[in-house]
Image 1 (cartoon, one colour):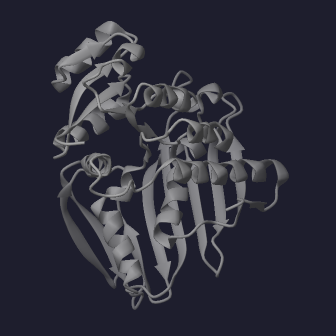
Image 2: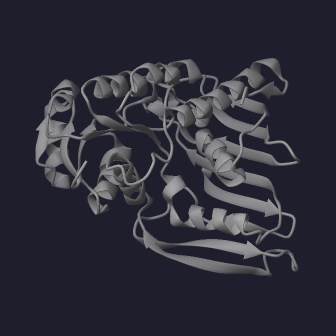
Length: 335
């Protein structure tokens, strides 16, 4: 596929209009040519504000546009798979927001239809310079053997109308942000967890998981632990603990676009972070980096970094976490 990738976006979801579309527009390999909304006025407003040439009043009309190469799908979680399948059948490649589906069985439906069209789950952190640098340092042995990955990610949202608080649309902390914890462990250990155990507290009204703590066993003494919440003060941090030191990613998930990012390296010689050293990385937009990585794969320059099978594995791990809530025991991931 020569030239820039021509993107279409289905829905005016906040993550799309505020983060991903500006990221694609900053990318070197893509342009956003169309957006669709079932609210025609909202779609036209978003198109005008973002400088997008076409605004459609239905998702079907956008998928039928022959001038669109790839679709970005930021719909609610329960609509990810159906509209990704529709886009694939229309001949489009798809970047689908996380999580790929509602569960592994849902995500597995993509196996039958992907064919020669590419699907990638939109975990932008995998392309972020601070994450890539952290993994490079782990690979080089800078902190010795990586044995522990710890993550805390929280925000406050008690709006009953917000999709994150609606069970039917795939709400809850684990599907919204717990999936980042899973990806962080898989990305930095470069391995799959064998079993998981979870403690989950649910909102009495919404029934969604509002505070979840998870431990994942990656074997060989390697442990991932994370806490995620939709009803705690906003905070996020990633710590990679090795036998000779640690790495911290200070704003791992939502750094401000086109601003420097910082990681800390600490050999532990003094407590309280007194021996930590900052490494500041140049300004970037990890959504732009994600779009360019996808574009390179579509043009055949590089393999697709993460496809359907990777997304299914993420969902298998999430399924095991939810099973652990019911069983109260360690649950195998099957990976």
